[in-house]
Length: 339
Image (cartoon, rainbow, N blue to C red; front, side):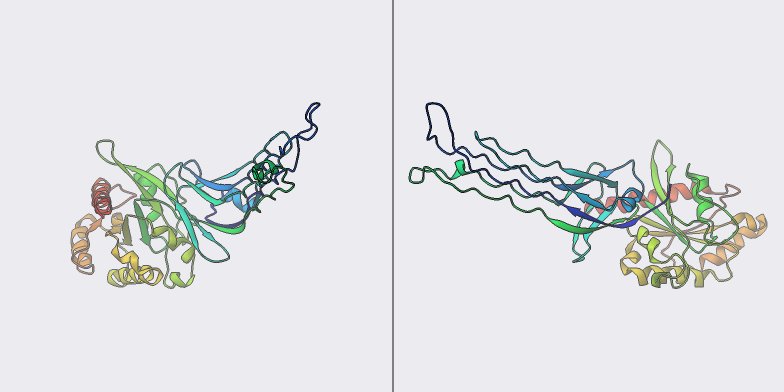
């Protein structure tokens, strides 16, 4: 299935139905009073978060959504039928804004959450509504109110507990496939991950967290280089960031600084997220050199940032990595609840 995380659609709610001008005409009541019914409500357009959806693909090929107009009222105080509503299903994590004004309309962050985009126009009042003791034969009614037309931008930002940050071929996809059931593409060339993917990582005692495999970052990504900002945005909602630097890196400090700089340039709030640094591909080093290399690499990372060397291929220290990430996720979420 193709991954689509950004799309613009046109929506329009229905017009309200017009009120009716009518008078009762019965055999023994030739001059009956007004009995014009009210018009029906126009259909509305709204969104609902569907946990079974993972992409906005459906909306790329169906970009126009016009709700039904309300029906006119009629005699005998019959109200017009309401127009049918339109409910559009989107993935959890979808942000919504007005394309013409850039105004943020809202976000759908939990399964089943709904968001009204355009309410239908109200139906007009029939002449029966305007009857009074001083005006017993009103011959006017109200037209229905018009619906609302908008251009709406839908933007999906993945909801994951842990987001992976690293250069192409740092071992992100291999890690995700080793600790979860997700199967992102793995190959020995850059940018094998072209779309984000999620994996559920099981930890001890039936506990778990969600990890996101994000396409590799290169210097200048915040300006759109490589796969650019189209995927940096998916890191915004991660509770914890795991920086991956392989053990064959020529300069650990420089790589870490570059990755951090790209996140900061995109959005400096990224730096407030808890982070760990994982030294991947530990199996590339002879066993007798691993501890020495890790000790040296540890000095290249700020003292307050946890680090851990591991190998996804050889399954070295993966359980320790999972527990470390899970503990960071719990700490991060507990702080969020406290706020």
